[in-house]
Figure (tube, rainbow, N blue to C red):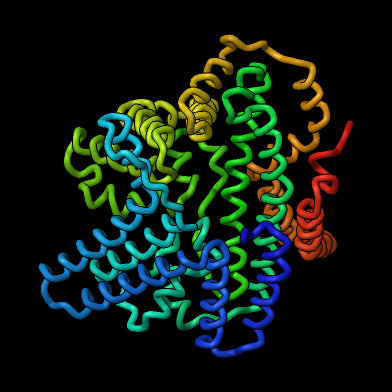
Length: 480
């Protein structure tokens, strides 16, 4: 079950909110959330619910023992046990097949590569549980005495599948004490509707165009034109942001509706002026996790230049691995490592000098990110080589009538998609509000209030129509 489905909207989310608001006490509301979260998670495979429940129990138990222990050595042993169990399970379920496949290619052993299905959301809830235990070890939060509340934290359906990675200290107080105001509900609905429309209308539309123009299959890539591949990868670049940020928008919105305030996960990364700035804006919860739980504990930048670069290498290797058990993801992580090191050594200071260099930096960053998504998209080495050749016109025709037709037929959609990845609308809205309040233009304010009130309904209707059938997508099929 995914957020952007009619089943989720009308058969899951609506009943969950109705029952949630029918009960009044926080404990009862938590039980409602936990029940629906476990139903949501088990939808894709009930057997993997045991893994989630088990990992939550282990983390609850170990955190409790760390909180009770008065000896640092014993606390370290418990923390080591937590990391061994949590990351051991993650390696088995996510990376064992990848490791065995590579061993087989190098040595011929093992004869049979194990085929293990990847449990949904295991990377997210594993990281969340480990961060909880580490924070208890550091004394930043108190160990939660009740197991079911740790399970609630790990399984909250808002963010269990696609993030953001929520730290326990962010929601610790709100698990036991939270109130939901009408302003919270309104803000949550607005944020959810933005994410839903972003996913159903824009991200899905970009995905279709990317698959058409820059397909992943090698036999289809060989017939693609250079212009088609460039345009297709542009659509993929738009898709990957719109899709991922849409899920974060919906998670933040659903959390807000029931009183949880999750932190932002994206901050318009395509306006970044450097690769470092891009990663301050892209998947913020993951970047800060690796910073706080890997980079800084390894020594950060406190032990000299060589050690700093080594620590960065570890972080970006793990960042690539986290995204998937495939060499292209590792290459993608190391690709960013190289440019981050270059920026750290000298380029970063040059890009920050003035407005001109920041503009140049913006172009440079978009080019780096664009080719980064090429590495990210193609898991097959032969397909990756073929698309790189095609992007530079080697062995491919430059353009075709179909490409020009695609551009013409989707011009309006492309414009909307491009505008959606920059903060233009947000800036205009806040600017109008600020000016209207300053000049006491109550007519303008009333119009803006009406627009804000109607926006969620319009976006939800557009999203539902897009989900019902492609023929109802008003942006993707607008013809000039």
